[in-house]
Image: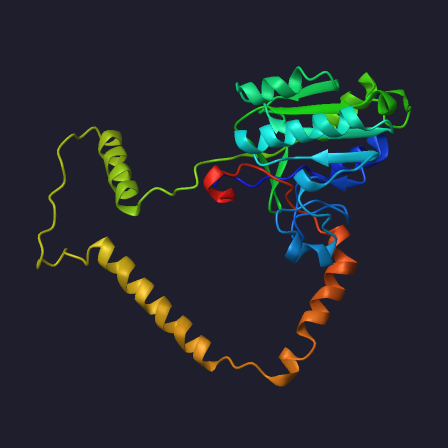
Length: 283
């Protein structure tokens, strides 16, 4: 899968105040902003506010936010479903869509839709996303689109005016840390690079003598140390698991307590609404 990124709180405020957004098209109980949302697993998520799968959700009116997984298959299904909803509804219906500005036919189809009433681009060097609790920058520009039918376009509360689109763009900008590679540099590679830099700074190209196994400078290879550390961690985890026992107090009403918690707190949980997900993740 890819990075899981969420729109910042400032953007949600603008979506609610300026576009009257009231629900999300792609979320889950753990990464929703509003109390109502569509999710991939309605059988598990419906007690926590899920409206079911977005592709099965057929609202006649309202305003919704969509930050779909950045997968061409999902983008295509979302676009076709929105086109169908907007063309069949005679009541005000609006969607604010946040997608990566890829050079892809599906993104181009969204931009050229007959229901597109406004769009704005947020450069990668200015945008802000939430990666958990951290403010990060994605490596691609952000495209914000507003898809509406004629009834929504005529409604002053929903109409995508240039002033509203500028507020929406500014809400997605700010100070953030660029996303870096997820894989860390191997310790032995880092040590070799540091040694080479030291040699170059000293003006000496002569390689240092390498310690031989068995000598006083010899040490356990790094891969063996990693295995030993993993074995020690596994043993400590097994001991902790063996010492943990479920009691009657823990098991009684466990499900009821969780249901009450999410029914009260789901609307205030700050989290992700989509992000980069590969087709394999959705299979």
